[in-house]
Amino acid sequence: TAPVERAFLIGLDDPADRGWPVQRSLAELSALAETAGATVVGSAFQRRADPDPVWYFGRGRAAELLDEKAASDFNLLIVDDELEPNQQRSLEKLLDCKVLDRSALIIDIFARHAKTKEGRLQVELAALEYHLPRLTRMWTHLSRTGGGIGTRGPGESQLETDRRLIREKIKKVRADLDAVRRHRTTTARRRDRHEVASVALVGYTNAGKSTLLNALADSDVYAADMLFATLDPTSRQVELPSGQRVVVSDTVGFINKLPHDLVDAFRATLEEVMRADLLLEVVDAADPDFVGQQVAVQTVLDELGAGDKPRITVYNKLDLLPDDAGAPPDSERAVFVSAVTGGG
Image 1: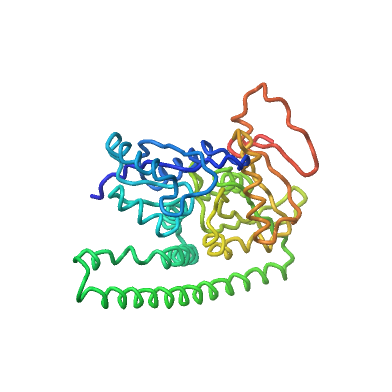
Image 2: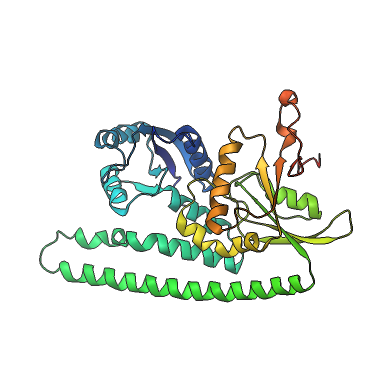
């Protein structure tokens, strides 16, 4: 059996960044690590504006990690940002354990949860693009032989061979994804011919999109209280009280600091968002930081070019709000519901 991964989390607190407090980001990183199957044994952060080019945090802070490793016996360090390949190498060498960054962690979770052919292709593409610049790490065994005569050639050419193989693989996965995408576009065109309006559920991960889809369509889409439970787009027909039928699609949850490779890889899933006539933005009203989450969602929507589509904001999880929370403001563009109890 695989050894238990005991994770220590660390991040930077940029004094200039007021949008997303570091404690909040580390709490989310902890939930991500647990979703990936790790046991979190501690966390820390350092206040500094810019990452150190070699160590990510300052050299002194990096050295303190050795003491933390001795105390908590962690065998995995997870950094709350995307690391440069050389920063990752420096930390792995110093701590003699695996070092992951937020992007690698999210890719790992996506790989566990992707079920459809398209979802798996998207994860594979994101993983290949993430690993390409980090390839040298795979070949450290060649440099361990002591360097010198006879060790220079093969390492270098092996690395080039690997890079070429990965680039070819990326090309193939892209072609496969395009084929899947074309098939999806054909299906959507058929839908358009029948003039069925389409609605896309968007929102922060774990805001309750799948639960809402189940409540609207009386269906049984997989829903769990965890990050990224849904990766593959799911569509259901829903009949409105007026008798009109619409297609409602669930999409992958958004998250703060979502790596660009992943936004690119998941464009196909998010094409449902592009094509939709209306967005239902599901917000976890019980989360103390839901405003920050809405900002993160808006950022991804803007990146996709869907930022100004017509939308209704659905404040969900009313059942978790304290009774004295008071009635939220009412508007044409916002509704307040509990997808679990059916309230609202």
